Image 1 (cartoon, rainbow, N blue to C red):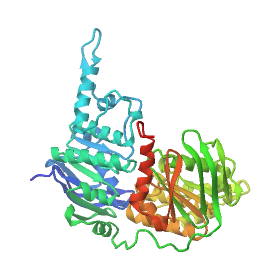
Image 2: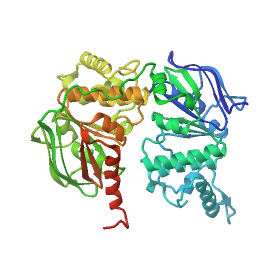
Image 3: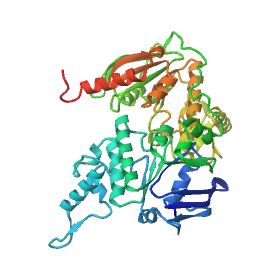
Image 4: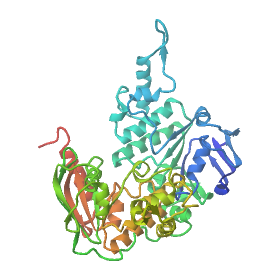
Amino acid sequence: MTPLLRFESLGKDWFGVPALRDLTLDVPEGAVLGVIGENGAGKSTLMNMIGGVTPPSQGRMLWRGEPYAPLSAADAKARGIAFIHQELNLFTNLSVAENLFLDAFPRRRGLLRPLIDRRAMREAARAVLGRLNLDLSPEREVGTLSPGERQLVEIARALHRDAALLILDEPTTSLTPRETERLFAALDGLRAEGRTVIYISHILGDVRRLASRVAVLRDGRLVGEGAVEEFDVPRMIRTMIGRDLAQVYPTRSAPPRAAPVLEVAHLSAPGTVEDVSLTVREGEILGLFGLMGSGRSELARLLMGLDPASRGEVRLGGRPLLGGPRARVRQGLAFVTENRREEGLMMDASIRDNLTLPALERFRRGLALDREALADTAQALREAVRLKAQDLGRQPVRALSGGNQQKVVIGKWLPTAPRLLILDEPTRGVDVGARSEIYAICDRLAADGAGLLVISSELDELMGLCDRILVMSRGEVVAAFDREEFEERRIVAAAFRQAEDAAPGAAA
């Protein structure tokens, strides 16, 4: 049977460096193909070739047996290929229906010129939303939707265009567990319709749950492919990284110390954080868990001085933490934001400039910068975080894979020797090999006496990494668990119980 899409000896070079090499693979029609691999394995390059963003350097693609060489994203769309990116491509100021029909509004005759047929647009939108069991008003503004609902609207747009192939890139990174299950149900429905899906994810359990086949890339090569039943998670990891990963979470090098490094008392901000008090000790990794909107990221922004607090006190090393972000960095605070592309990196600047920016003052020699010291420090950081890059001084950080970008975001704080490091979703969109390396960095910082405050939506990450976990809901700390008390059911129940108690119509 002719596959929907076939790659024959496909390759791509960037400035003489191979990103994809001699890849031959079939995507059967009606299959869900899970594509996995470490950051930098070639997944994005392959998807960009499918989507007409970049042409292959060698080999060819076939669509239903015919040569396929798209020159643009429009060419891919015309063939029935729809991309649903991690950063969703919706207009938040338009309605659901307007987003679905943006490239071809239904028309009706007007007195002077054709008009948009709003009634036909609403009816057609309801029909396609119904196929996904998505009970939304077509007139609702997309900006008011949850991330999970927006993800489904993207899929609805692909169905409206009658896409034969849907490519989803890390679709669950911003979703709650309930939204993730809703997405999976929608994808199950698409598979039942005979649609073909390429599903890219670093969450290997999700790949096993959804995919019928698995393709594994490593260093630009296809190193494993077959039915999902042939790939348990240990085999996936072993094939991805070329070795057994005996322990994702490192054995802690040193226990926490008694002395507090961060003390927060009654910190509040209207509508986001309410009367939060907590302590992080030297060498301790403290986790923050909660549902989306619980106030975790808002608390981090208050601590960093990015947003103003209405009351409360924050002390670092026994002294009041005052001033804005720059002053707080000087006092020993560091912050790895959850939004690395917009807030954590200068995407068009070099890797070296990004790595050395927070500590730039240390390299000043009068009015000039000590370029040699900058280069030496960047090289040392490259080795410390095991960064995969070609040229630190000339390569823009934009050219790195997501996992290597995240290593830059974390590594840039190491020269500042922070007393407290806040990490908000530190491994979002990062492969299992890079995750292990990031966890090792966290362990080294804690062993050196720094305190770490880790915010994560992945409870298993917090349970594997942290000494204690606090649960937040509606801006408050509602529960605390020591390591010996870690139990997934209890921690999740604490987060959901508080959220449901606050829901409209809940019993008093």
